[in-house]
Image (cartoon, rainbow, N blue to C red; front, top):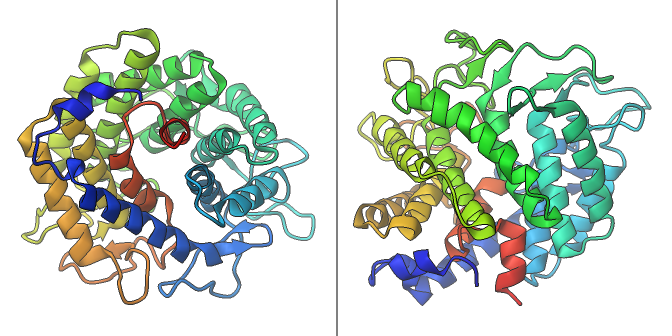
Length: 422
């Protein structure tokens, strides 16, 4: 099995060593999978409400469909019934109704009556998840998974990757004109995840090197220069945009200010990239670990319990004060994931404590044992809220939180599962 060293470094009393804890993680993951299955619609997957039902009219969402396809593909590799057909449905829809068959690429929602959707821009964020889904489907042997991967990489490489900048471009019009005057950390962060998965599946190390270049730009340059407070919004000339979305601070993808949940998510990805480079080429920049540690601590210092109640807040301003106090579930999931990764990488007891603290919070506040799934968002008093995220649409972050502690840091999810289960 890959990456034996971190397993040896775990403290003897770590939850990660305990079979009951590992069974609990597996059980929680399967509960999430079962809750999510009604999200299937004719053209992909749609968002569920708080009770796990499809509110009318239920329209396929391409980003959600790609995320679901990724999760179901990895779950099918674990031998979990029902997941393989759902992954195949996702692949078929990404190759069919969700795809732009005129100019290639993917729309955020399917065309209606032969007309482009109202928002027909091609988004880097979505395309990163299409590539991730396709890579996972390929590993799992999902029909047409490789065809989807080939199509996704062709678009990703031709239109989104900027060799000169070492990052992914943000968005274009449907015909690939009108490039957006924006460079964003969020889409590039998820592109790092997808790049590592694609490198594992294709065997092409160029994708791993691209992930490293993105990390060098956003983290080892921009975040490090800001003492590991990560500004996320820039124009195409790399001028920071400090007032971006000041009037829409609860934007779901590009909120005003900074996002501590992203600090810790980057931390986890840096450790995965370090492990991937060590596993495949025997060396990795030493700063990947240093930056990962610094980002985690910055995220927890500025985001956790900043208003007296537990939980990681959504955003902070340039004075490092909370802007949106609500606690999205994905922020907690990524904080836990980063703590687990740092624990496996370093063996330090502080990360065991954070791992337990965050899971205790998720268990007591976010796991919905009455209606199912996870509550997607809590307010500053840890009551259910829907200011940023309504319903229970997102399987991706929560489910990955239940499986990440069970896997090594490298290779990526689908490949690691294929090695672990065989």
